Image (cartoon, rainbow, N blue to C red; front, side, top):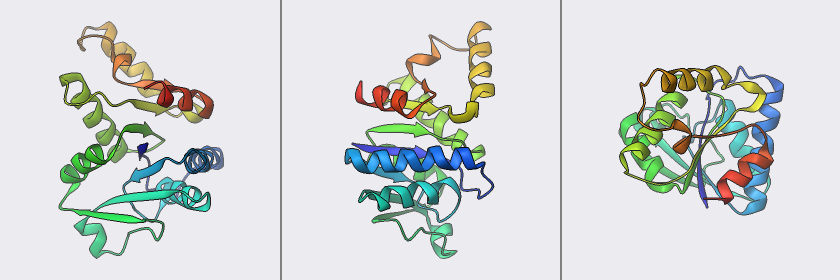
Length: 178
């Protein structure tokens, strides 16, 4: 399976978050899954890609031209797909992937996650999207989504389009159930 992982490019990460991220990369390699990601050489993206490669796995990096020019592409990228901008990148990531996992991240990670989720709500795809709530990182977002649902701001149940996992085993089960 080609699993797209959205996550932070920041190098300022808690040790426990890094450990969980590296465990995910090792699991992906053992299972024969391909990592599809932003292809940048920093933060959780780099830690994840290194773990996939250390386990003998394969990576596909989708990198905007601006970052290519700046030399920000990870040496762990096996297949490099260039793109014009972040909108282009999101579409290419969706096209290349069978499933999506969201690790801790910031504005870019949220943008990517909600683009995938919104596309699913309209019926553009039926690919699983799993938020990996390691170390309760995403709990404030989960609480916000629940509050929006209670206030009638969403059609239907948001959990139909965004699953939540708190452990790697749970994440693996959610991905294999799809």
